[in-house]
Length: 194
Image (cartoon, rainbow, N blue to C red; front, side):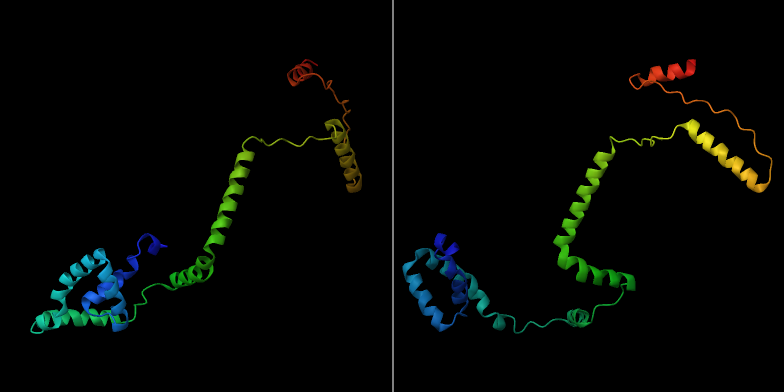
């Protein structure tokens, strides 16, 4: 796609190699034909050639330069350090965590990220829904007076089985019912007055 916008862009790397004298003969002929036609590439080639010419004979220029003994020792230490295997300073749990990360999590990182996103969405949804609800006590379908009467009967049966005298049964109160259409505040006032 770049070649359509800049047709000479594909020749740039070849121009660099030609300026340094490293382009094979088979490709050099085609590039020289292009240089004969294109002024912009010709100018670029001459600029590269002027920069590459001083560097072309670097072996001759630096042939008599010798590093001092301190520089040789530094290079030797740097080469030994680069060639030495990495030290095993990491603890065993860290190695296990690294291995788990590389084998389990990293290859499937998009799946894990998706799962985390789903769990966060569910948690936020649950949190937003739980804010409006308050814990409501379960409504008892059995009136309190009937429960009290059943408890007294069980106590008297237990007393008979253990051979103890029966307990005196307290008279059960009839359950008070307020009309369902009456508001709670009025029901409470009715119960307190009675």
